[in-house]
Image (cartoon, rainbow, N blue to C red; front, side, top):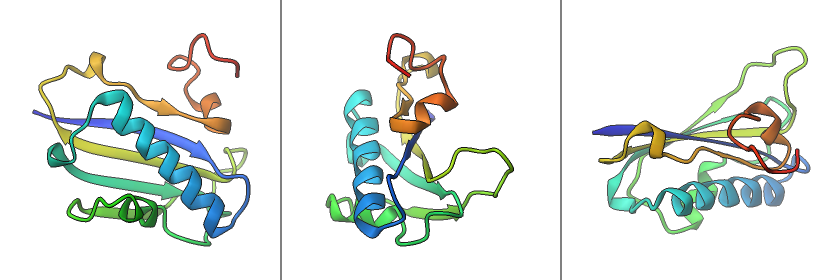
Length: 123
């Protein structure tokens, strides 16, 4: 069965180092918390807010050694009042887990996007 896992985080600044660190941390958490084997990955999609343009977040995944999974980066629309410096991801996987068993990851400033999923954590 195909499943999707969501993730989001924020970068401190629009620099290559900050974007790669934030994207890498998010993807590692998504993989770790869900026990994902890279052989089960179908693809990963990323979006960035318009204020982040120093590097593609997919580069962080390639630097992790994941080289045989299709990756694609998109620009997030510039919506008035939306969270700034935000990187979002969706990992598509083959899995027998139910949707309720999946752990969606929201880190740093992006925790405000899904307070229902980060219950018990300091927002």
